[in-house]
Length: 208
Ligand SMILES: N[C@@H](CCC(=O)N[C@@H](CS)C(=O)NCC(=O)O)C(=O)O
Image (tube, rainbow, N blue to C red):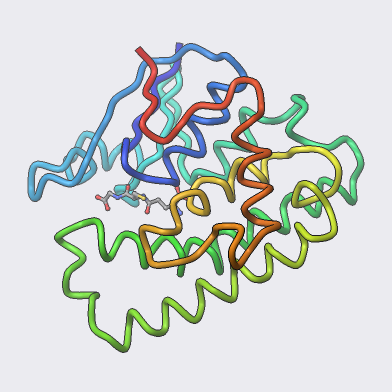
């Protein structure tokens, strides 16, 4: 049995919980949310598991730890239907997962976080919010163009890239982004397609 340290409100943590639910894996779950100096991720014990002080982080029975949501997705996803056997398809999956961390998470997720978490209030300047809006809309438009061509991000089948990008796209409205059929119908249809997968769980689902 391994332990997953994750933040119930966070898309990065949700991506991992979503994959593990699809795979039907059992694990111990330790939840953490921001709580000033008492935040679990600031403690010496946690920093020894992950020196970046971030979740999601997995601790295996051996005591080995693994962090970075997309690395964790790759670890558990390997050998399952979520990782394509074809080399180019697999590389395209990586392409979308790097895009997620470099462009999408840095704008769509950050703009939502700025509104959701009180400690991010200092980031709510009009200039910062405007820049995040431009960057986030660009990221969502990139997805719209691809999803207009294929049902999933890398083609006809769902991969880790879809679970990964679902994490913050499904809640993008929290950051002031429109992902409804009004403006981005292909993204909206894709969100529904991912939601309809057997084994899907919502953001607020936590293992018992
Ligand atoms: N690139 C990292 C980002 C992880 C991250 O920023 N986690 C945030 C929640 S979304 C966190 O752990 N915050 C707690 C803290 O900063 O103390 C990943 O994908 O796992």
